[in-house]
Amino acid sequence: MRSVMFLFWGLGCGGTDASLRSDVVTANEPDPTVKPEPKPEPKPEVGAAVVLDDVRIAGLLEDAHAFSLLGTVVNPLLAEQIDAGTLLLGLEFRSVDDPEFQSDDDTSVGLYLLDDEDDDPTDNFDPERPETFGLGPGAQVDGEPVLHFVDASLTNGRLEASGLGALELIGDAFPLPLSNLTISGDLTVQDGTVRTLEDGRLRGALGMSLLALTPNPLGENCGSGSLLDVLATGCGFFGLQPDEDIDGDGLERLFDDDDDGVIDRCVDGDDTEILGTDCPFNPAMADGYTLIFVITGVQAELVAPTE
Image (tube, rainbow, N blue to C red; front, side):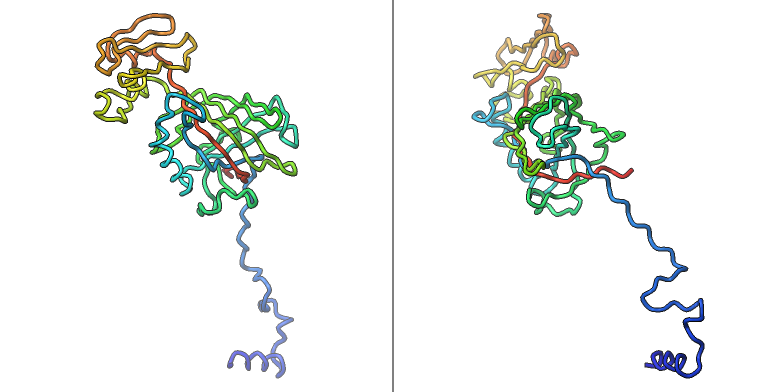
């Protein structure tokens, strides 16, 4: 009350007129001596994109491959990480000439690990309200994706893409890096905007030396060898030979000549034999096995790093 009465006295009883004083700041006006905080620059948006709302190892009836049965163990872990927002993958459709995303024989696709901008996993996968995601650390170099599918095309809305690079896709749930990556799937488009990716596949190869270092997931139920031993010997039933010619010299073959559940003879693509239980680690044995994931995605907004 005292301050209010003093103000009235100053204006009505001969006090100095505030409008004539340069050192008086009237209410609701910015103080010219205080510098306003700079507004943050908006992060540059990346092109049309989807965030993957489902990533799972394809089953035998979906797309048979050497790891089809592994999905029964790994897929629940993948679903848990996706729902919690700790496994977020995004696809960016780059330099697409067709505004309807139906036909383009010369385009490319970026694959990114993403960060949830609002740290709320419950709103990550609503195509009606696309969520905003930042690109994970190291996702781009000089504006180009590190995982860049440079050989990509769209035909009647069907995406086919391949590129170089390796992806350690699943982190703690499946830490082995995938090489020879390809992506495929059907895009649904509304008003010139990609809404969903349907019936998608992410394919890659796991090299035999990496699989030879991976413990046997069946434990004592199938010998004491590695995951590679289980695949190649079939645990005494039906073995699977490598199906990815990674080094380009023909498919290599693996054998267990003494039937103890452990590989002891390798044959290179040029038919050179390499003997011993350590033969999968020979540099000439570079081939591996195809791993296939079923993927789907919904519309998302991706923003590039500002630095």
